[in-house]
Image (cartoon, rainbow, N blue to C red; front, side, top):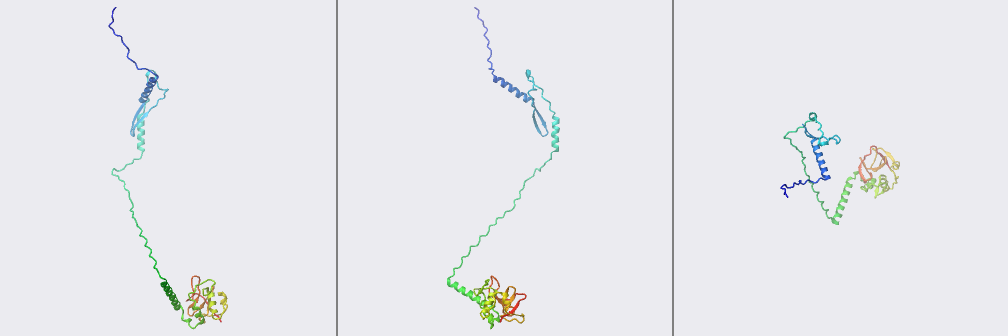
Length: 261
C-alpha cells in the first residue's frame, strides 16, 4: 500500500451571509451614490453645496452601472451672485468708530427737615384773666376814640354809641345782636320814639331833609339799609353779617336824610 505525501486542502472560513448583510450592503451603496451626486459650486458670496437628488426610477443600478451626473452651470450661478452683490447697499464703518453715551447729571436734593413745633406756653388762669381784661380795655379805648365829637350832648348818638361792637345779627333787635333797622329802632325806643321795623317803613316815618340841613341823630336811608347820621361825613350803623355796630364814613352815593319827631 502506497502512502500519499499530499496534504488535504481546506477552504478558508467565509463570513456568514444573512438578510441583514444584504441590507447593509444596499444602504452603503446608496450613500456612496448620493455622495457622488453632490455638486460643490464656488460662488463670490461663499461656498454653495448642492445635493442633486435623482429619482429612484431613473437611477440605473443594473450590473453595478451608475447613472451619469447632471451637469451644473457654475458660470450662471456666479453671474447671479455677482448681480446680487452689485445691487446690495454697501455699509462701511470707520476702523476707529467708538460708541459714546451721554449721561445727564443727577443732583440729589435732600429736603430740609420741618422745624419742630414750639410748645405752647403754659398760661396760668390769673395771667389769662389779666390778658382778657387788657383786651377788653383796649377795645373800649378804640371804641371811645372812634366816637366823633358830635356825640356829646346828642341824646340819640350817646345812646347809639353804647352799642359800638355789638355784632350784626340778621333780624336782631336787641343788644345781643342787631340788624340795621333793628339797631335804629332800639336806639330811638330808648327815647320813647317808636319806629317801624323795616328800613323802608322807617323812611316814611319822618320828614326828608337836605344834606345841608341834616343834623346829628337824623336817619340816613338808602335802598335796603338805614343808619344814624353822626355829623360831618360820619354815620353809626349795624353794617352787615360779619361786622358789628361802628362809626364809619358815609359810603352811600345818594343818601336820604330823615328827621324823626
